[in-house]
Every structure is written in structure tokens, then in C-alpha cells.
Length: 265
Image 1 (tube, one colour):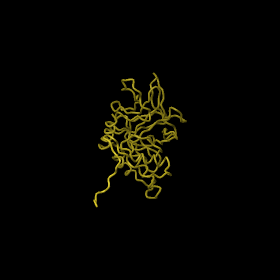
Image 2: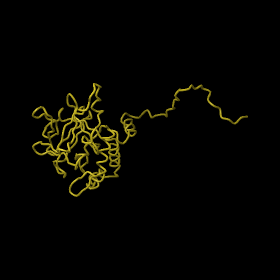
Image 3: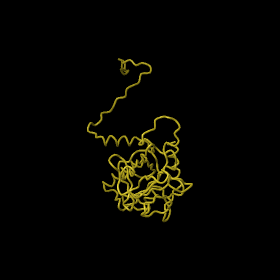
Image 4: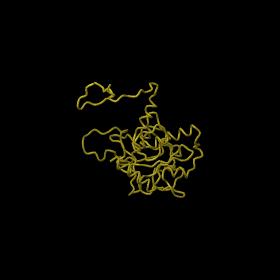
């Protein structure tokens, strides 16, 4: 008797796609678990929305749903100031624009590097270009990005709402907002008492930093790390910041931010 294996008798035609067998999936898997699996399949540099304030870290893209076109917070390194850019400024055709949550940065100047203040829910936002200046707000609500050192005025507390939008509260317990100034120009202010349309932003972070936050939270719950004892210097090293008494964007950090913009363009 022949020892050859019996081959399947089903006929196959040229060009016919072979159906892959699916493995049995647990029917008890909830939507949050499925979403987490999808996040794990994303490329590290994919731009995603944060689900919690702790996930806002690393290269960050901040947009506001202004009308008629969304704007993003950018930095003009030539003039050393914050600018609000129309994200459709280079659009030349009549094609449909992507939704605001699908937007990604197209220039290095639109990317901010977020570092977390150890043991607190606050963050610092520094420029991804130039000498690494931090976004600050004084007691009069004037917002600028001209300081290399960090202090209380450079600290912001992100608040993530159920719809995914984010508000930023400063040390004076006032909120960052979009304000219309003379000539119909738009500018940032930091003296809003309440959160409304002008104070709500869409924030995009990179997938790898969202995963990092999940791993950090998992270890914290397991008692492997104590966030209140994290050393500030170690935190700076994680995000490639260095220097005594001030934070400087390292060459590696600059390369990463430039690479982000190249991939987006």
C-alpha cells in the first residue's frame, strides 16, 4: 500500500484566495481588551489619542477644533514664540479634509516633547526644535515659550474628558485657551476660570509611549514601582533631557522629532 499522504480533493482555481482558518477567540473578551490588543498591533510611531492623563508623554501634537479650519500649537524658532497654525494652510485642492482626530503633524515645529514631573500629575511641554524652551504661563495669563529652565509656571496638569478631549490647567488653577485678539488673530491665553469650547484640545501621542504608560501602571499596581519615589534625574534620562538645573533637548531627541515630521509628511 502506498505511504503517500491523502491530498485534499477540493478543486482550486488560479487566482482564488486561500481562506485562513481562524483560531477560536474568547467570547467573553470585552471592548476595552479588544482595543488594547489593537493598540499592541500598531507601529510604535503611530499617532493615537490618549485615554488617560498619564499617557500624555513623549512627542505630542496639540490641536484645537477651530472654525473654519482646525489649528495646532506650534513654535516659531526664528522669532522664538508660540504660533497657532492653520493645519490646512498648505491645502491646494478641493479634496475632503481628514477629520481632526485623523490629523498628524507635518512639520517639526508642530511637535512638543512632554515630560512628566516625578511624583505628581503635572507635565512640562517643551519645544521639539531650537534650544528646548518650555511653555509657561504667568499670573496674568500670558502664555509664552522662552524659558530653558522649569519652575511652577512651566507646569501643566492635563485633564482628559470622556470624549477624549483634553484641557490643560496651570499652577494658578486657570486653563489654557484659544483667545481672539486685535485684528481677529488667535492667541493662547492661560486665565480661563472654566472649561468650554475654547479650552478643549485634541492631543495626539505616539503609540509606544501609550504602551509605556500601560506597562508603568501595571507595575505600579503590582507594587514593583512607587511613582512617588521616582528620581527626577532618572525621569529626564528616559526622555533624553540632560543638564544641570535646566533641560536641554539632546541630539537624539531632536533626531526623533525630525523623524516624526518626515514620516508624517
